[in-house]
Structures are given as C-alpha cells and as structure tokens.
Amino acid sequence: ELIADQQVDLYAKVNGFVKRLHVDVGQQVRTGTLLASIEAPEVFSQLAGAESRLKSYEAQYIASKATYQRLLETSKTPGTISPNDLDLALAKQQSDAAMYESAKAAYNELSDAKNYLEIRAPFSGIIAARNVSTGAYVGPSGRGSEAPIFTLVDQQKLRLVVSIPEAYSHYVNKEAELT
Image (cartoon, rainbow, N blue to C red):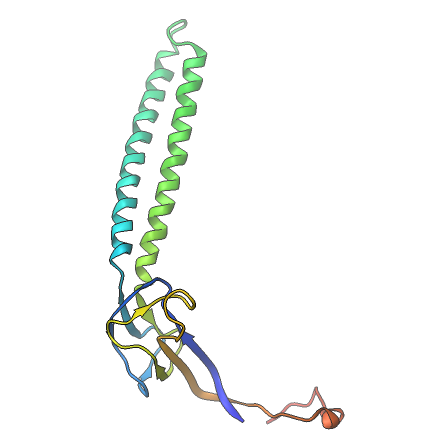
C-alpha cells in the first residue's frame, strides 16, 4: 500500500463558527496558507476584559511603587518612617508587581488565542477532505465537532507499507535498505 508521507486532520483550537473557507477539496496549498477563518466573539470579549484588568493592575503597581519610593526617600531622615511601614510598602509593591505580571500573562494568553481563529496549513500538500461548511460550529476534537475541518496530505513523497505474515518475518532483513 502506498500512503502519503504526511497526513494530518486539522481541527479548530478554539470553539467558534466557520466564518469563511478559503480552500476546497483537491486544492494544492503551501505551508502557512490560510485555510479557514473562525469567528468567536467570546474570545474578543475575554480579551477586552483581560486588557482592562491588565490596565487596572498596572495602575495599582505604579501607585504602590511610587508610594514605596517616596517612603524610602523619606525614611533617609532618621525617625520619620518606621521600618515596619517601609516593609509593608515594599511588600505591597511586590504583591502589586506579581498581580500585574499575572494579568499580563493572562492577556498574552488570550491574545495568542486570537491567532487560533485562523487555520493555516502546517505543510505543503493537497486538501484531501473538507468536512464543514461556512457557519458550522467547530472546536477541538470532542468539544466542537468530531470531524476535522480539513484533511491535508503531502503526496510529494510516498511511503510503501507492506504487511508480512508472522510466519515469513524471519526472512526479512531489518537492516536492509530499500531503494
């Protein structure tokens, strides 16, 4: 049996609706070709929420950092600021910095999810199957649709698969190279 060297079923990484199919069965595609666009409004609303949380935590961090810097400068004059107040201000600054970094990571994660709204060809090949139409609900296998959006095969290089009965397997030289 001759089979394609590479074959892959392409699924959506995020749940959404097929906005547009850019290719069809039998079409030759190159690596990185846009195959389908997915619409997922909740991704954009989550991104907007993450952006507002990011700005809020950034403002808190900037304020606590400024407070700590002022207290640090004031504490250089003996007896003006207790060491405990300075320690509390530093702890607040570090806590706000951690919250800001956490919000930044959450925003970046959702921003990256935006990239998953475009299905691109991982390698050059031919679209062997298209299982959805525009408007179909898609997602990761088991959560959106069971069938892949596309099946992509690379038939530039083929592999030969030969079934050999176990009774004849001792005749096969495993180190021999086939040409």
